[in-house]
Length: 363
Image (tube, rainbow, N blue to C red; front, side, top):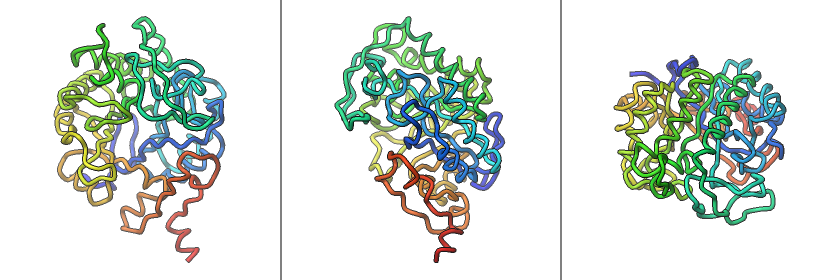
């Protein structure tokens, strides 16, 4: 069985190990969604990952409702990302960007218009805005004739990603965002070709991934899904059937890899609502599968040993430990993440976490 330290091929990417940096929303871009120089430092520090998946990155102004998050729909944004991709490559790493449409999980004060979704619904909780937390507004249902424009936005962002120097993209189809709002039966009440039975609810996922594959090639496209729990108000009554069908569809489209955010019993988020869905998806998808949620070196290696996954993604531990692969391999103590600085601006809690060498030098 492979080890976490073994290389792996993810489409066009030859990753030096199987320890993937999970996408992690941070918020260090400008209000115009332009990446800043400090972001190049942040990703360069973590280039020992086999693959870095960047923070979620908006495909359009209407798609992006998170303050100070980056985008990929303007020339300034493309130029802003180039120092980060160059820094990672110079450090020997590989990096893809996660393409994001938030759907109903945004606010008009950030998006510039009423949010859109599969149906006219309102997300629970509060939107994060420049003016502080505000209740989510009701989203309007996308008209079917608007969907080609959404596909165009994804294609443009994917082309821009390669121009910015990324090794590929990950489609964010998880965590209750737009595509997930189409997938799940508690958020999708449509009666057209995008609603109702599973084959209709996975249609948008298929159309977006097909367009991405046609635009930049199947070896440059990965997908993220979150199959086994309620996330930001979105869930499904039969996730095993839904995500088994989604995995089969993605295999047919030819995407290079899938990453799953799938909480496990005993994790930091409590017990998941449903048993793991990845065994069903594993049978339907013939290319690499990456598992993510509360893994450490031991449990991650156990998942590889059991044939459940081909690589493991690490999230919050990568925020706090820029040299995480070394620490996992050598069994070194980990820095603790500073939760209160996850979404603030500036260097604190972003590029000031020490490596093990710096810890030792300070001691």
